[in-house]
Length: 106
Image (cartoon, rainbow, N blue to C red; front, side, top):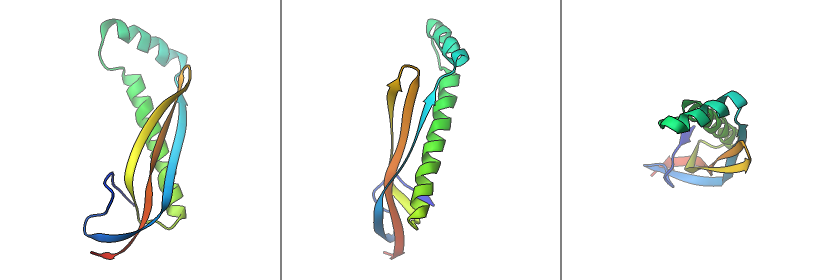
C-alpha cells in the first residue's frame, strides 16, 4: 500500500474512499521517566522517548493501513500525524489520511 503525504498519486487517477485513521496511547515507564529527568540536567536526545514515539508512530500507521485495506484501498494520500498529551505520563499518537483506490494511469 502506498502512503503519501501529498494529495495525489503521481501519474494515477484515484478514487477517494474515505478518511482512515489509527491511534495508540503510549505511557512512559518509571525507568524511562527517571532517566529522562536525569538527561534534562545535561541535555541531549532522550533515546528512550525517541524509541517510544517511533514505536507508537508505527503502531498508529499499521492500524491506519489496516483500516484502509478493509475499504479495498490501494493507497493513502494526505497522511498526517498528530500527538497529544492524554494525562500525565501518557500521550496519544494518531495517523490519518484519505484511503484511495487507483483507477488508471493519468
